[in-house]
Length: 472
Image (cartoon, rainbow, N blue to C red; front, side, top):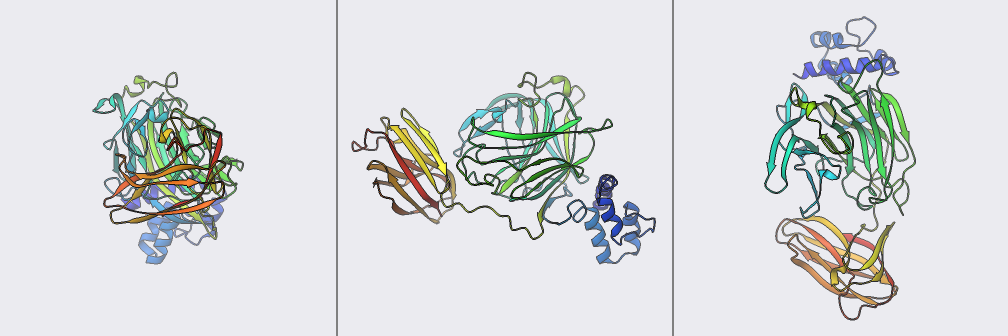
């Protein structure tokens, strides 16, 4: 099976190389075992008979693309899909139709995009070195999320693999048809600059099922929705080609530039992005993980930006096939996540008038009215995973333009408190440190309650600055 896949990969690489400098690299390497002036699949066959073990390994690596499609890069992670099932050490299934918060509460359906499918763990297969994601027109009912007319799959490498920079390369093809939405993309492992899209999104390839002759590559950034923005560019296939055929989609991501390729054809370069109140190159200076999915319907290609087209499935299920996923690191490149001197907080507000701004090194809550409850205004650090018998340290520096109390808690999903401290925050910065222990594995939220925690809360407008927020 492996040689079948190597030959398949070689055909793709050689086709791309024929019109590029890659062909020069191929011919420059002493691997022409058949002496026909080119390095091709016939050399692999000949090498199996005459080459040494070391030479054969070098040719295998060469045809698999390590030095050819990514000159100056070294392979650091890949999935060639050579097994008989999905490698769950590398991928997790993201299930359902609803996005959830850190406690598992359902917050919006359609994954925020009006998508019509229900993602399951039954819509993938691995065979002959290819991962297949199948979108199906079938009835599916979930006891919590309701009933759906379509199923598909969405895979994520979150908490299993992520990278900061490099070359991310995927060889894939996809069936066409109105309302199909194949995507190869990346999200931040930790949203250190705030919620989407302040912490960024990288779309390596997105395709429209209704127009398979083109794809696009995009980055999302700026601020949290709805104040976010994006940059995008289309790639148009020529000569009747389309996403239905095998192509290699890639992004090369440096600290100050991103480049998008189809079959090593550079079609987009972006250098100007930002995360509000943060230093460049934020947000694209952190670890991002990979996602592969085939959506049905939604704003990208759905009917009226919502509905799936049942006619697309008249002849059966539709496939998004992935031959491999490879991630390379640039040789000699020290690009790594920018250390954060203070964790970013999110804002919860109920019956109060307040705002929160995250900056480099601090979070500033501007409070106009405090509301009627202690939690009417909260700064949140959500979804922090802890393990049994671990002791964690929460530290931060706080000051306020008006002296006042705030309450600091660490809570689980059932609101049980493992830390509950009320402190008096004055006009001079003061550092606080608390130790917290846990008896079981869980996710916890760290909360800074800035509402009416007591009768001593000032009624005047004021700012609370939280800096050097650390949870270790």
